[in-house]
Image (cartoon, rainbow, N blue to C red; front, side, top):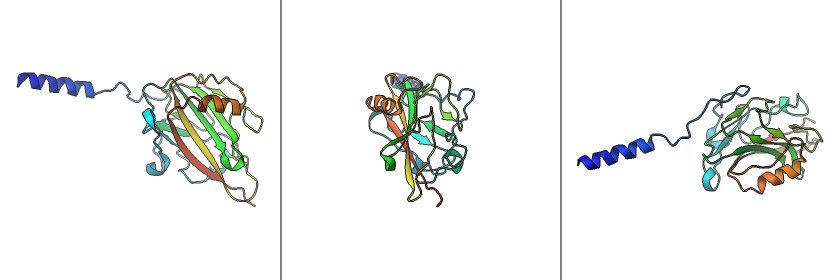
Length: 197
């Protein structure tokens, strides 16, 4: 009986912490903000990344990206937050593409330290790199679709278990290919934008 109690105590001690406690975000980024609708903005993925999440405090999935983040506003990247990053993650990467415009690349950021949990609007964490977007500029370029139906913007977070190899100023499509070929766990947030006309 005494032996059974000792085994139970050891099991409880082992389960009390898996070494993946959330750390506070580094200076320059905000702490994650709960999404407007967690069920709509968090997506699991196959394999070890099941439960990885990606949200924004400014829009939920299926909602429009606020004008300030587009070519009609200040054209700054929106704030993002994430959680449940797998313990084996070496690097995080974020991409934003427009499937309604032949996969137009709006943003590729790689080299994000796995301890980072969120990005403030327009923020780039220390050590992160950004590729060139399809507008020919470095970093983020916001939605700027032609007048007509709304376009969709696919934000994808990758939890990479190997270095992406992406360097600052790399071609956006080449950077996207380098990230996606690693087959990492992912989380996705899809927003829309429609120009007034």
